[in-house]
Length: 453
Image 1 (cartoon, helix red, strand yellow):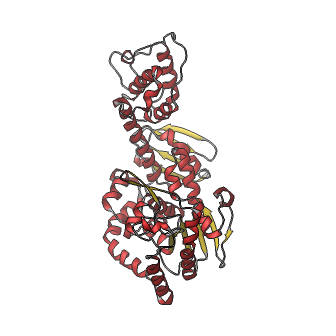
Image 2 (spheres, helix red, strand yellow):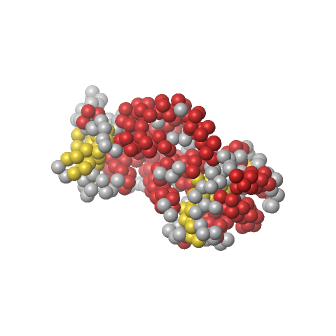
């Protein structure tokens, strides 16, 4: 008998004792207090006496179990225990991706991670007043038992706010110092509007990028079941209807003008035939910078990736999509920034049918420095954000670690100031989800700080 549906500690203690007593999975009925269960397993029984010594399991299983335990599937406890018993005798079995049990556990964990992501993305706080002042309340309906596991994220992000997240099964409250739990609530218990909602809608409308509109993908990433709690969703039909007109306006806004425009067009044409280093031999095309040529803000990445090489546009692949999301979270309008790369050709290693990114060397960075210098002479940005060490190397002429320059304002000449942060592809490669969330939040802070320079 487990005290809570998401209690990994209670399950682990019980599972360890049962496994050390060689109790077979089929002989156990797992139940949670307060929930209905097996007709023949209504009473908790004492734990058996261990007959085998303690044992260890791979860290990978521990991580898997911490996610799977949050799933709503009533078989999750039994499935995890079955895997535990197998790992007791054969720890390497956790690496067998063809194992049906392992695949099912992976699927459950994936569904839980997706639900955690949805909660982080779609919780919308509304302001209310109580006896202690302003408080922010949100209502959310998770698919799985993720509320307690997700509380740390909201504590980190909204540490200075007083907030409550209400869900049908469990509510959590943060008063600035202590996190408490309370019974579940209904949508009617949450406020339906607040004074800042109009501002939020205005912000959402301003960051809506009609040039990147993909309705099917948007609905897939933002399922309609969450729309009732999200004020900005009321704007979506109108934004979709007006997307084409806004896209035309954006193109007109970013179109090159005057002598600078002519110089930029000639420069891009010249760059399309660049043979300054060997990278042009394998790349599909030169990927030049894009954006308003009178932009105050310039972003410099490393080099185009696989999708950028095919599209001929910077930051359109997975890293570019993450970049767009971080820009929106930082309150920076990409349409008003000039975005380019330190190296204009895609460098890669061919592995089977895949082209795997390969970091440009010092000679290739130096060869491409001429192009980035010419772009800066035309655009004349006041602020430059360097994404990753290759961009730092290109504009400062020095191969420096990101740690040594990240919190500094860098002088890159021409009166422009620059700051350095990670490249968004770094965030995509982080294997640990918690670390990835922390690093993403820091990346957003870097973008916001650099934009204020």
